[in-house]
Length: 290
Image (cartoon, rainbow, N blue to C red; front, side):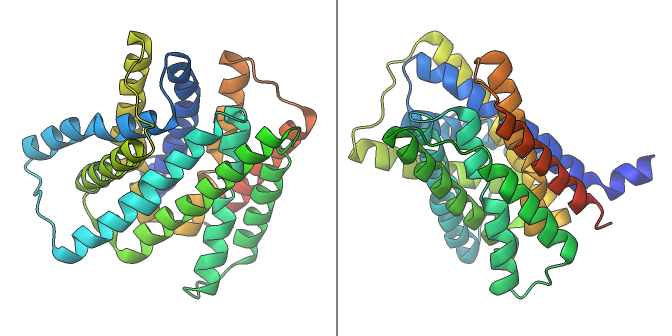
C-alpha cells in the first residue's frame, strides 16, 4: 500500500491541492460580503502568508538566498503567473458565479497540453489528448451567457486561465519546480503581494474597510492556499509534469461547483452535471497513463 502511495504521491498532491483551491472561491464570496474586493483579497492572500512562510523557512534551516537567474525567474512567475491570474479570477466573481468562473479558468489544461506539444515538442499521447478534450468540453458545458455582465465575467475568467497556464508551464520549464517548495512559495507570494499592492494603489482598488469575519476568512484563505495548496501543486508538477498536473487539477471546478451549491445556493443545471462527468472522465483517462 505504501509503495502505491509513493508511486502516486504526485497525483495525490494534485488532488488535495485541487480540493483546497476549489474551496477558496467559496470562502472568497464570504469575504466579498464583508467589504473586500478582488484586488484586496489577492493582496491579502499573498501578503498574509509571507511572515508565516518566512518563519517556517528560518526555523527549518532553509536558505533564503537566490541566484540572479532565480530572482528574475521568480519575478516573472510572481507577476504574470501569480498576481495577474488571481486578480482576473477574483474580479470575475463580481459578474458570474464562483462555480462558472472557476470552471472557465480551467481552460488552462488544454492550453498547457497544446503549448507543451507545439513549443516544447513534448509527445502528445492519445490518452493525454483524449483527457484534454474531455476536460475542455466539460468545462464549456458550464457556460451560460445571459447578460453583458456575464460576458465580462467569462472573459475575465478565461484570461485568468490563460495566464495561469503560463504559471504552470514556466515553473516546469524554468526549473523552478526543483526549488524547495516553501522557499519558492515564499518568494512568489512576496512578489505577488508587491505587484498586487502597486496595481491596487494605482487604480485605487485597495480597501481594508472589512468586517472581522472578512478578515478572518481572508487569513484562512491565505494559509490554506499558500501553505498547503501551492506547495502541494508544485510537488505535483515536479512528479507528474505540467500537462498531467493541469488535467488532474481540473477537479477544482467540480469542488467549487458542489460547495457553491451546498453553501451558497448556486444552482447546478443538467449541462453542468454532464460537464462535471466529462471532467471526471478526463481525469480518469489521464490516470491510465500509468
